[in-house]
Amino acid sequence: MPDPVKLPSEPVLDGVADDDKGTVRDAVYVLYTLKLCSSWSVLAHPRMYELSGFLDLKKDSDFDLSDLQVIAQVDPLRIRHMGVRVIGASGTVSVWVHIQRKSEPVVLEEQEIVRIRKRRSWWSG
Image (cartoon, rainbow, N blue to C red):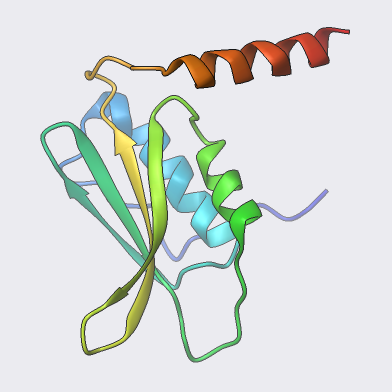
């Protein structure tokens, strides 16, 4: 069994509602588990949170679509968008994740419902 992930300290989630702290905290842990970031920040917006994990460019690191999919699996209904961003002239690279607030209604598209149903059928039999 792998060792548990140890952050430098428990994430301080100022501005994150109590109902949302579990999902945001889990997403931070996944970023550290994948060794995708050396630091992070969370911005609270009216309908969602933006989690940014800043990559340590002093060491070699690779990430791909499968890493982003692992992040999405933290809460597939609430993690709606994510990507990679280069910030301005500094060239800082970050992985960003939009996490919908629990108080916001979940909106699913027909394609997502079909995909969930197919996955469920495959699991059950």
